[in-house]
Image (cartoon, rainbow, N blue to C red; front, side, top):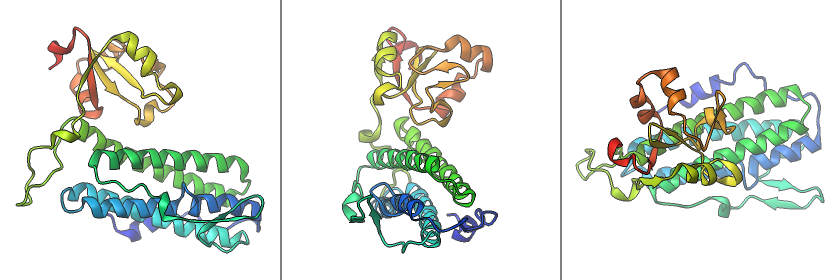
Length: 278
C-alpha cells in the first residue's frame, strides 16, 4: 500500500496558491470538492467499497484504499484553493442563484458485486475528468490550472488500475480467497460470457458512439477497448474502434497476439472463428 506521505510529495512542485480571490472560480471548484461528482463522493465511495471487499478480495481492497487516499489528498488541495479564492470550503455547492446544495451520502453508489464496483468507479473517474476539463476552460489562473491538470492525471491513473482489474475479472483471473486465505477457483458470476458477433454488429453497435462500448477485432477475437486510454478518442494510431484490424496488428507487432490477450479483455469472437480461438 502506498505511503500517504509519498502521495503528498508528488505535489511538492506545485504550490497551492491563487493569483487573486475569485468567487466564480470557487463555485466551480466547490462542484469538484463536494458536488454529486466530487472528491468527497469519490473518497467516501472508495472507502465504502473497500470495506465491502476487504475480507474476500484483499488485493482489490488495497487498491481501492490507495485510490481513496489519493482522493483525500485532492479534497485537501481543493479545500485550500477554495478558501484562498475567498469562500469557506463547506461541503456544499453554491448555485448561480446563491442557493446552497449540501453534499449528501445518497451520492454514493453502494454496491457489493465485485465487477459492478469496479465498473461504477471507472465511470465515476471518467465523469470527474470530464468535469475538471470543463472547469479548466473557465478558469484563467495558472496556479489552479496546474493543480487541476495534475489531479486529472491522477484520475486517469486510477482508471488504468481499475481497468486492469476489470480485464482480469472478465478474463477469469482469480482474486477470490477461500476460508484458509488461499486463492480459490474464480466465481463464475464475475466472468463475462463470451459471445459471437458479426463484423456488421461490431461496426453498428460497438463503435463507441452514443455511449456504446468500443470493440475492435484482431484475428477473429473481439476485444473491449472501452476503458483503454489509448483508444479514448475512438481511434489509436489511425485505427478506429468498431473495426477489424488483423492485418494492421500483425504488420506492426508480428505474431504477438498473446500480448494483446493479456492486455485487453476478450468479450467474444467473430462468428465462424470461435472454434479456432478457444
